[in-house]
Amino acid sequence: MENRTTVVFEGNGNIVSNIQNVTENGQLNESQKETLEYIRTHEGCNTTMISNGLGKPFRTIDKHIQFMIATKIIERRGSKKTGGYYIV
Image 1 (cartoon, helix red, strand yellow):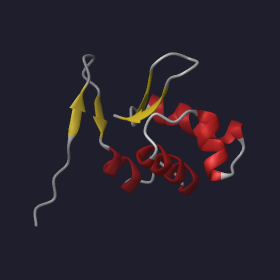
Image 2 (cartoon, helix red, strand yellow):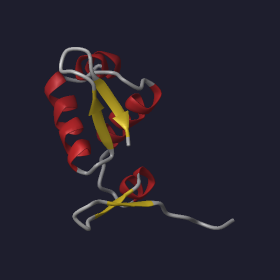
Image 3 (spheres, one colour):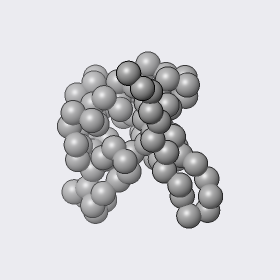
């Protein structure tokens, strides 16, 4: 079986790895991986829902989310009040 890697080219020329590369290269710790998996299985969830669902502090989940947004793994869609997080 052939291994393939998908990359996204941003307008500014930066290459952003897909989720598999980010997780395999050790950029996410186990807690961040749990958060990412929760978002994958509960698309559109918000920080409070993730925090309650995983039983982790809100601030911890918020830090995970900010890191994953910065590395282009997830994105926020919708308004502040009703929006949620989705895998890119």
